[in-house]
Image (cartoon, rainbow, N blue to C red; front, side, top):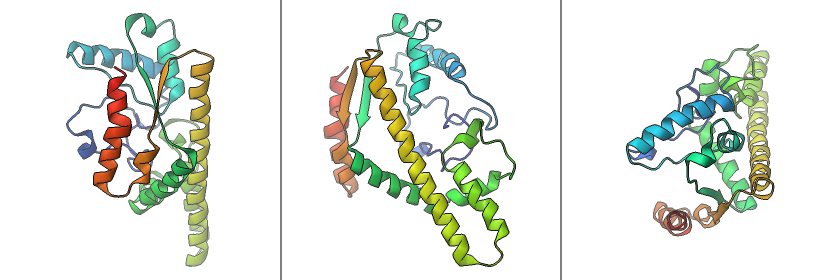
Length: 228
């Protein structure tokens, strides 16, 4: 969903500061009502991979969308396995810790303006089967915006409907993560991908930025670098 223009909060796009000067490709490049397929992803990424390699840098493909990455790697047309020496890294977090992080993250997104962001593109009869409107957070909040118009001056009812929509975002995010985990395990067990499993749970147990940064370096960054 991050390939589409707009909905920066809903799609949780990386910020300019978070990029730390590193060029990121395909973020916010595609028109929001387009239907960006796995084939489109592969065509774009083949171009970007070659561009990055010519600059003598290492391409890092990040997802998210494991089905798109599977298409890129497995499709015989793109010959990814024949052209490149890939290293697959799965950064994982213990489920109960991840669930708490989901709740916190969604609350942070709401506080950052998620409702108003969806309101800006809200169309009552919009097509939620393609493009950026497939993003978790858009259809759930659109339901609230429809109900909001039907409730005159009843702030308590509006709050209840809003909380129900927020709960739906959290629930659907958990479902997405479960599906992603199933896909990763299938790629390992059925497609025989050699995947380096990095446990990042300790990072999400810390509160202070210094402690988070140190945990990230020790439990994620260094183990990932050692896999090269």
